[in-house]
Image (cartoon, rainbow, N blue to C red; front, side, top):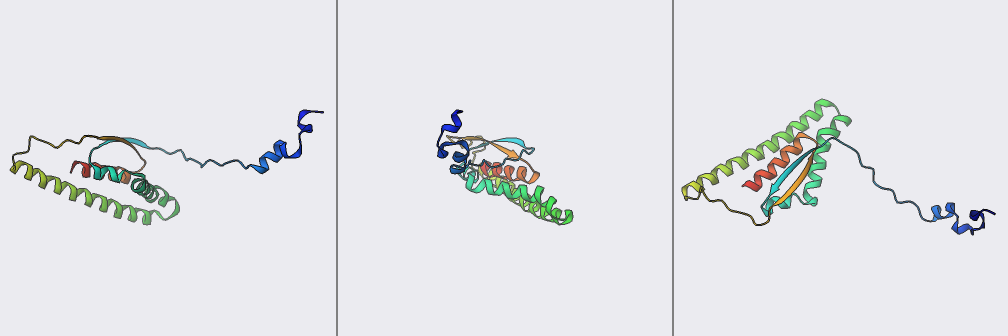
Length: 146
């Protein structure tokens, strides 16, 4: 008799597979991304890069710019994109104005040659899959610079 026939029913391969189902691995889509490496120094910018804040924002931006075009009308998707871009660009303008204001303060105080230094900078690589993601990453860098 072959060895498989001499095993009790509970040890046959068919019985084992029914008793212990295979664990399914999540499907990973392969998509085009650009790697953007950021050097983040401040604690406030680091907080934005934590998974709890960063990952949902990136998934939402990807969904708006890529998936929304697949599931809705192009004109509606472009209107939503325009709103998102206007908001991100508005935030970038506000950050630029504040950085310029602080530069004037540095100059007035005679500190234009000195810069604060952070003790533990962090190098982070972000996978950018849409223009809004790049804008968001740039906002984080500007906040860090501020």
